[in-house]
Amino acid sequence: METEKGEVYSRALEAFPVLKDAAQQQRNAFKIGKDKTDVRWKELDEDIHINSFFDTTEPDYNNTVAISLKQFPQLNISALANQIGINKSLLAKYIYGIKKPSAARKKEIERSLHSLGKKLLKVEL
Image 1: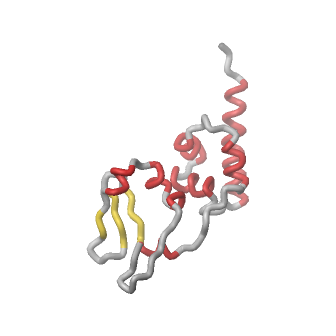
Image 2: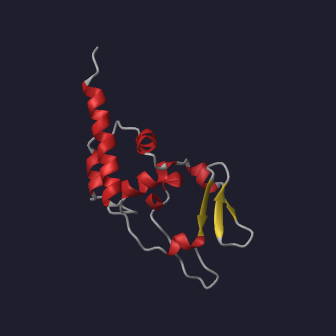
């Protein structure tokens, strides 16, 4: 993002998981809001306020959620987020280290993974 004063701000795409998961063509299909304080991707149903670009939080890929889930690339993050009862974008932000989950939220993620493990152990073919 470039301001009228010529200042340039950017964020890692991981800060915006919906955009990260989108195709380049979808990311390019945006509109600037009427008051020029937000960006809208209608097809993706995603809105980003201009203040999001001023956040300097960098991705932390060495967080416990990322390290744990990296072991299981076959997991469907959308389904896991749904099981936990949170938005996929929020879980993705935890994975990318853009947001830090509370201790209680970490326990919810852990319980969901353990529940999945118990169900897998019951599978008989």
